[in-house]
Image (tube, rainbow, N blue to C red):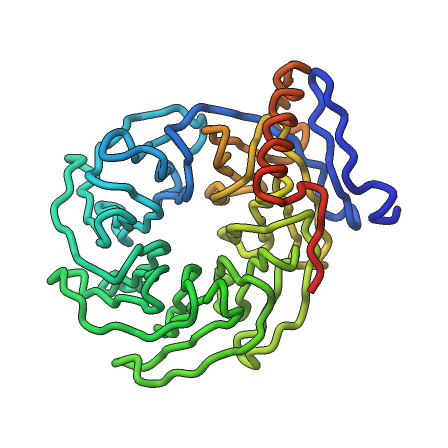
Length: 363
């Protein structure tokens, strides 16, 4: 079946969660299986090391109830945590005891003790930190400073910035290998900086990777770097040995965040413009996309600890959604009036921003 024949087909009726796109059917059919409320403008979502808990940063909440803690299986809200400022993204220590959050308003990274729910330390960074990554040994923490063209390297034990690494325009996505090689995706200069070595003295730049490389993740064996190309509507797959992009997998429109399943088989993107998810099977590079009927812009995404199941945040609709294999759990039903309202809100946003849900940008 051609892409044209099945692209952008959505039937807004009760009980229907129809795929927008199906390319090679190795990825099984998907359905929307859970939906729960969050705080305002949920941005990033991450999974605890034991796979039992999800942490959601609610960007639209200031000072109060801006971190949501959820059961990873049921999506039941366990508690809300008050963090001073506006938090954007988070990362967790290898032992699962400390959550690090980037604070857009305070230009800092805060340490949150998860047992007490209290901020125990705050570290000043560059301007408007976003994505955080922790080294595999838990000793170093990196913050991508969106507005100051650099990355802060933090010694976790002392809470001090040990060095500041130059980056390109609007650094955001980051990933770090087990050997300590750090990749920094620069959103508006369309390149990736690479740092390595004990003092990060070895550095080079990968130019013209794709249009708006927004988010990056590494495969479990560090052999591939997956790049969400927001302005190109593709997921780029880079061989980390050769540092060459070997594949460009088409998504529906505007892939924002991406995540890799723990076993490395699947990669999933949160498709911002299309308000949905694309899942890619790395064994044969087949893919399948699904629109989430009541979602208004996909933002953060994370795989469950096992199986083909992803949790994605709805940026403007204030919800968490679970998408999994059709038939593995009951699919949600959506009232026609609610679907129509969501579609109207999407169109209104498009008219204000000049974007289009159905458009697919080309490189």
